[in-house]
Length: 163
View 1 (cartoon, rainbow, N blue to C red):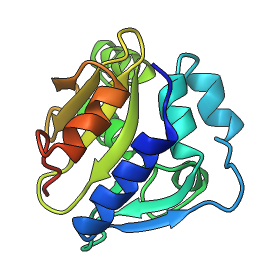
View 2: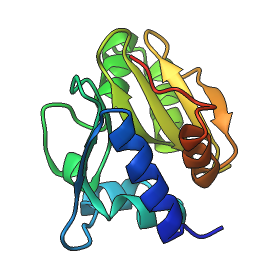
View 3: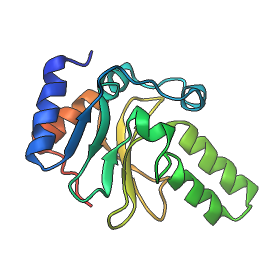
């Protein structure tokens, strides 16, 4: 299913009603080569959606959608939760390998640092959207079968983004 202009507009309207800050991109953005090299199967629907935005963040600036701009630079890096897990592995090679394998297939799309650290991500092998929390980021729960379904559930208030 392709991303539609209506879905992007409905999402933008939803986000503004929820008090989120939305900054639309004047021109289509691109992900850094580092990201596209690591993640080969990024869903087309997510790319079609995210290239339209520079910023999407909640009113308290502690939860945000990762936009192309966020992958370039910022206070938090898209892979900070992976790095936290690797630090916790404390050099254990087997555990570190499991963490890296998980994150190589789990593409983060939303980060939250307002309470318990949490994220939403796309499982690249299945296209499903998952939600994970600290301290064990690598054991997420499925919240939607696709990114399009995830947006539809947000707009319908079937998924609440809370910190």
